[in-house]
Length: 164
Image 1 (tube, rainbow, N blue to C red):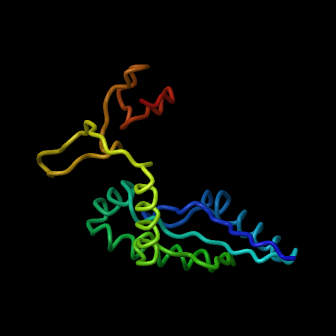
Image 2: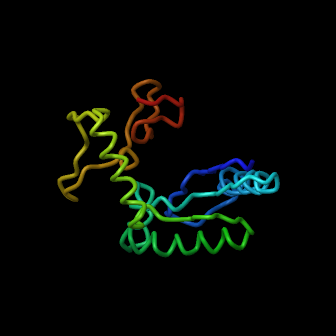
Image 3: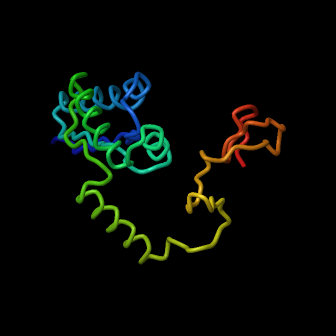
């Protein structure tokens, strides 16, 4: 009897094109594994997509002088083209802005929330009065409280590796 196998991979940010690290890390290995499972007679499907949310997208869009949506639309199309050119075969390569993705995420959130697993709390966050927005960690730079490195970014230090 054939096994049912769902292979899910990381969703790369649609902040730019895919690169060798994407291919070696989370594109080629699951494609190989999915093909192997199919060769064994299993019903295997491979699923992933472009992550269209996050600070890397905001930063790249600001640098390009376009909206985040324009950036992810352009980059998603390029990512799909490059994946196909490499011969990688996803059964579903989607987007986090796709209606079916949003419905599924909302359904999961509502279910988890209804079961009491989500808790609301307040936290401090950096706010830019000029831009009138909260600043994600990648927008912040300062001195690491552990090693004193003066160009630590956000909540991590590239010098000593500390996260805070």
